[in-house]
Length: 359
Image (tube, rainbow, N blue to C red; front, side):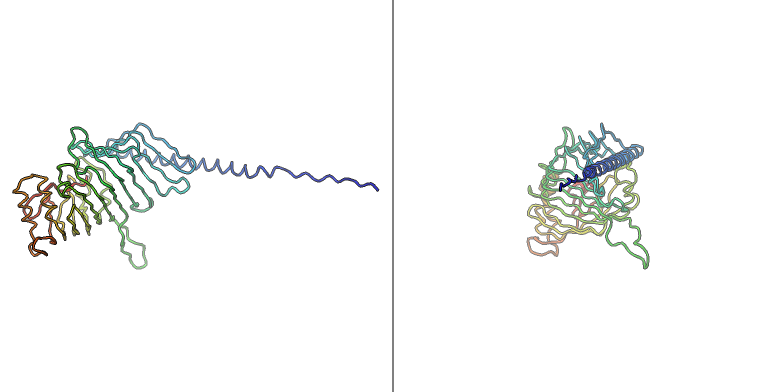
């Protein structure tokens, strides 16, 4: 009896192509999303820059480009210049903003080749370091979370420019976020806040040769950490004028409150507090700061000496900082009050140095 061979059915190979087809479709959709995202970001950025120009700012750049496909969205501006009507601003060979294209809720902005600070009539100062960057999160909030950082910055004034207070630093940081502690009415959402928390850190900074920071730190390092609440922060969004970047905020009653911090200058150390500080229309601090200081005389005499170098001023500063009711016969631990007024820093009746300038 003969056996009849049975031919096995052939399986279709069409199913082998399905994964590749799905990957191709996904890639096309993802690419479309990437181009849409980068186009929207560039469009919004152009709009913001145009608004600055319309309000009197000087804005220019050579090219705006997008890169980073597929995982990142990176928008770069070549030879960017942004200068306020007051003459303060910055220039950078390249400024780039980058985010994950699959979750573009956190943007990191960096000056990849350093930048130049434009200081109005004071001239320009080049800033270079290991990193100069800023991150933005919470973009849907009334106030986003902002973190700015300069790692190992070096400051070099341009030829003919006025000296910059700092020569270099290990780290400079600035953090801003919506004010914590919003009041809540029973059964209602938190009230809209117009206050912002700010934290500034200056780590192991060195002043320029012969300058006030070098004298204050007794030729050593200056480390400073200060936190405060910025009230009426919405006024900071008003267009800057020739009066200055903070003129509108100051005119609206803006101020720093709940100021507290810690400072180390050479061998001197102090805790500082202030109920309120404001800024003049020139951006200089105004108000009174209270210090609980350890070995403050070296810093104060160094600051006075850096400004004039005369024995009279050194003696006056030492007398003003003498321990009147403080601890220790040598005045190692005493309480001091420093007044910022009319662009000067006063210890008692003695003007020691220019008031700190915020821009």
